[in-house]
Image (tube, rainbow, N blue to C red; front, side, top):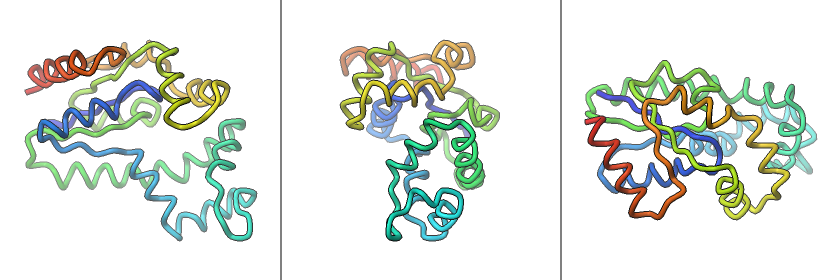
Length: 191
């Protein structure tokens, strides 16, 4: 089995690359979906309420409020990551065991290097584009301000640092056909 990470900063095109791979018939896991799933688990929300009670109003969880708190306070962000990351690591190890007989498995994971997960993967594919393209994508997709984009982006390792650590780099700031060709070229090298 080849276990391959798709990483990149927010708005760099990881999801687009993942979708191209899925269309080619590959198994692709999405870590962001795992995190979103956590916020629907009653047990997890009880833990969040214990550490972040200000994010609950009349028993209703306000995720935007939590986001604002953690993006404005690095200590609170570390605290939240301390609650989320162990669950994600456990799930990743389960996925590795469950798919040990597959030929190629991809995992879309934004904070690969920040979480120290690169040790679990055979190869790392980096989705990369310029910061202006990132900003415009994220502002449109998430309906956030440029200021919020910069808050999020500065919490992640820079694209240049990630480029030094990645095995393959795919520039995603191009038209879809060219991007698809680039993904297929990397696939050819991986296989």
